[in-house]
Length: 50
Length: 576
Image (cartoon, rainbow over all chains, first blue to last red; front, side, top):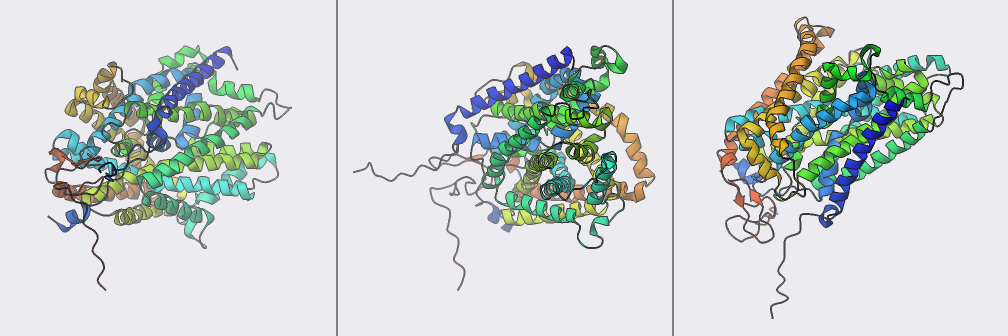
């Protein structure tokens, strides 16, 4: 494997790994990402009304 | 109001359960056999490492811009209560006539599914064969290649038409039935409980299998001491060393237009743009769900599987054991003829072979699932059918088409013909229509503004110029060159009735399917009336606020009546 081969391989893989890591970090760092983002309908139980 | 409409309105709208779910579902749709088999072969044949320069340029100029456009178009249509490609194109175009080109957004995934599910079943069949040890290429290593080709030929019935149905049901037909049924069970469960739940589990499992195979390939060392020049480093070098045209300097490959066309074609097909799938998937998003980061994440996940895994496994493994001659042969040749030979030579080869084909099966099923949803969405909203009826109808259509591909198995001509027209030519056409509609009719400024509703990051402003001028031009150039290279042979094939007329029959099958779908779109347009271009009805109930189709009476999200604060009427009890 030539030096050029190493450069192209490491740069390509490094670029993609950096991009995918950045994206998943941003997606997973939001609290809503893993949990359900469509919240259930609010149900007013009237508990606070006395 | 017609009976159909009355049936449809109370149907609850489907939605994604989480952002991670939709990202993995879109990525799963994009990651397929092409990531592991087509990309490495294309890269090695077009400059090796130098190929990555036009490849990343194409990602930035064609792949990502169209991807984002499709995400925006889908969410926009979804906010007006529509999920199918014909309806969404009609909404974006502002005229009902725009819905008719949307037939491609139904035809392409249905037609591809017809043969893709067959390839998927081959992967499952090979995985099973490796798991049970029933794959046998003989004892003589010099005959492995012939043994592998013979095994594949027997498995798919390549020698004559109807072979898979003669003398009882063949194993490959059993695997096809299993795969077909599994797809429809998952799709019947719906967006969140079916597609999303499966993709969330399948994608990490797929990555795990690929990483195990990668580790095995990278630790092969020099397997044959008699051939010290065939080792891991030379295998990686064969894939990644930058190569020039005819042995020239490496940058000469960048001066070759074919390298750029190959790179653009690879990105285009790899990201699954122009299929109508991303539009359909993103239509299930809510108004403020992010499309910029989600689209980028899905695309980068696809790149991870393609560059980081596909680029390090297939070609290096084939080169180490078979030399440069083993690295050619196209997707099927590399995947089903060459790699089984590689696994035969390799220590723990049968276990690695099982992991490899099981991974390909997962990659294929996450893609095939996405091909069914656009048509189901259309049948539900266009004809007012319920989930069960839509799934049954689509199951019958795709089963008939897939049976056609299985029956005409000689030389895989039927599969190749459907792949050429529906899986390649029509995709170019739909992608071009989508880009023109989005940037020139809907308006790129409006699209740019819509993109950032709920977005956590901004699309660079240059995207507006790229999607309006560069992407359509890029698509057009690729399409013209592609037509020049491929169309004359295909047209001659049809005119002269080659291969027993199977290509002509396959094209007729696509024609009949297109007409059938156009009739359904026409019926759907009558049903939608002017609803496509009317303002959506926002659900007034607290905690919902869903945008419904203009003619809707009940909210598709929460099921409550839109006009008044009442709950959906209960189902009448069956008469006793």
